[in-house]
Length: 129
Image (cartoon, rainbow, N blue to C red):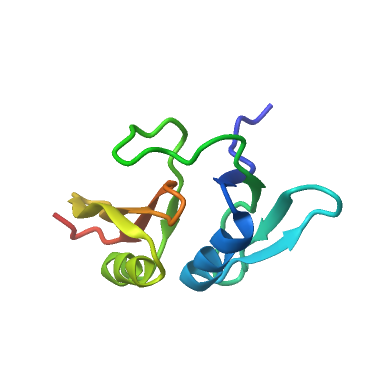
């Protein structure tokens, strides 16, 4: 049996307000699952290869400022880490970790979405470093 990651999930205190952040930042499409507080997240497989995901209403308070990460961090491949960080900030997010080089791999930065969730953005570049 394979142990591949098959889906990611974002917890949001107010998904209806958080969904536009991800739609505008990455172009993801959200569809509400009938009868429950759950939204399927569909990536455009032609433009954004990867796994699909979901968003669920958070069962509790949003993470406190400067709280340690207590979940897996997913990283999204983007054309430009600099542009993704700037776009996230323009949409109400913040930079959680500035752009840094991962030698021989590429560039990486972390974003905190408007609800406090942390995610990575990365651009491949064998010459990074």
